[in-house]
Amino acid sequence: MSLHIERVLLLTKVPLFAYLRTDQLSRLAPLLEPVAWPKGTRIFDMGDIGLEFYIILDGRIGISVDPDPSLLVFINELKAGDSLGEMALIDNEPRSATAHVLEDTQALALEKEKLHGLLMSYPELGIGMLRALSQRLRALNSILVNPHR
Image (tube, rainbow, N blue to C red; front, top):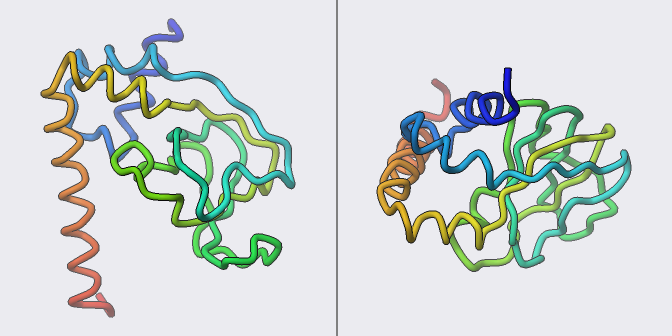
C-alpha cells in the first residue's frame, strides 16, 4: 500500500477530519510530516504558541494541565491513533496543556500555515472540520448535562 493511501486511511480515523470526503483527505495527506520524540521530552508546554497538530503513530503521550510541567499528573494519556493540538490549528490562543512523551513516540505533524493555505484553496474542507468540532461540543455538553451517564 502506498504511503499516500496509508495517510489518507489514517486521516479517516482522526475526529477533526471525520466529515471530510476521501478526495479532501487526499489533499490533506501530503501536508503531514513525520516527527519523533524520545521518552521524557515535552512536545509543548501550556502557554506555548501552537503551530502544529499531531497524529500519534506509535508511542504514548501524557497530557497535563498543571502550570508546573515538572508535575506528571495527567488528565489524559494518548496512544497510537490519537491526536493532539487540534485547537492550535483553529485559534491563535496559547496551548492549554503540556504534552509529555511517556514512551518513544512517532507521529505525523500538520503545520497550521499549511492547513490554512489548503483551506483557502478548498474552503469546503473547513465545513467538514466545523461539523466535527460541533459534534465534539455536543458530546461534551451531553456529558456536562448528564455527568453520570
